[in-house]
Length: 179
Image (tube, rainbow, N blue to C red; front, side, top):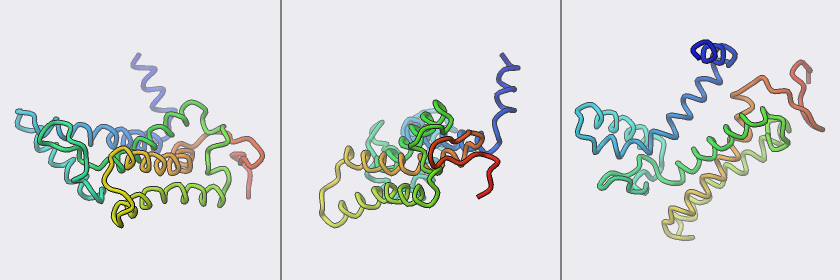
């Protein structure tokens, strides 16, 4: 078993491994923070403080996170967590087909970037509509808009972060081809 794990780690590029570790931390951290903060053990609340500090740095509305363990909120709002879930879904999809499907936007060059950029604009669109009175705070709506932004971002960056797939199709790029 140890040989198969080390072989898997050797075959994976370092950037891919680091990206997966960071994504795992982004998925687990906001959920774990309230439980770590409420834990009676001495070091766990300090770990929660670190997670909350990082959430404060990246989330525009961390006070809107759902309460997971009263009185402790999740460290980011549901919009941010929806974005992270969108990235996790695209990572799972990329692991399934190694970038061979047509929905991976990096294969379309500039047009793929534009499509990813437009879907990423769903995040600030919902934030602006909420701020300017388009609608009130709704964690479900926030999560859906964040998920759409995360899916758009992930469909563009996952093939870049996890190289090595052969891209085929009408606009696909072959690995050794010069453009």
